[in-house]
Length: 147
Image (tube, rainbow, N blue to C red):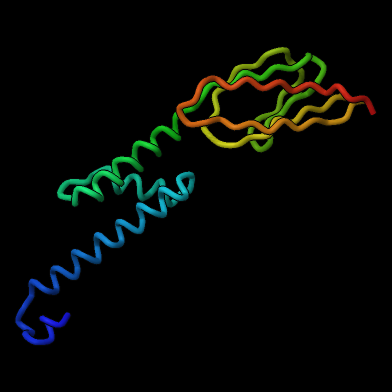
């Protein structure tokens, strides 16, 4: 800025400022995306960050890490639900079933709550987490406490 004020015929100063501002915005978006990896906005940034030709090395590495973490987070993980064929099981905001012994499904990484209901018994809630790139998760949902 000081050089530009001394000599207004220095277009390279304005170009440098614009370039620095661009990389500063990219770095801020990378930080936000890393902190809030599950958001829709991060999904948009990840698509933008897939093409990184000519990026500075440090930002290139951060962007590659975010894209890899995002892709891993999108891969479903196997979940095995077990019950007693008398408890109605649902996963809150995902699926509802009648009774069953075992049910296999795939869920994206995140935190879930399985809910069990059975006539004459207290409802149960079983929180569980599906970790990105993790092993098969087994969850047992059985209502056992009578009312």
